[in-house]
Image 1: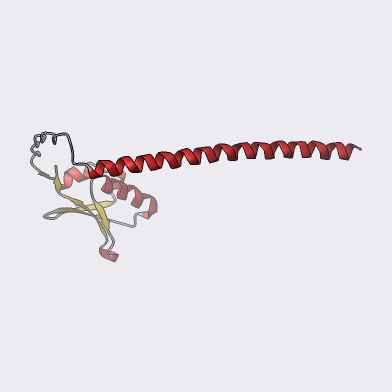
Image 2 (image 1 turned 180 degrees about the vertical axis):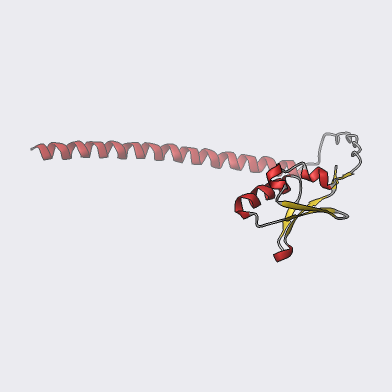
Length: 142
């Protein structure tokens, strides 16, 4: 008798869950239909705007601000970007357009990631070239 009561309770719970699912499906169907109508309306508005020539005059051109003169970064500018512990692991070499940064020793993944993050943050990148691999930072800075 107890088992029959438990099964009827489970059946009642399942029926309630099925009812709730049905209610959710009705709501989702309404939302789907609303979205379909909105999409159709937006498409027709977009098409009508594309077909019409602009009715308002074009805005006046904004004055172009002059760029400040470019400044070339030196080794000291780049070294300042690194914490002392990382800087001590690196050699810096100045070229015409770039500062080349090479490790003095094996960096390990953690130090490599920290250095790569600093280099990317200042507009540089890593050049993978076997034993000649290095970090490269452009000297031009605005």
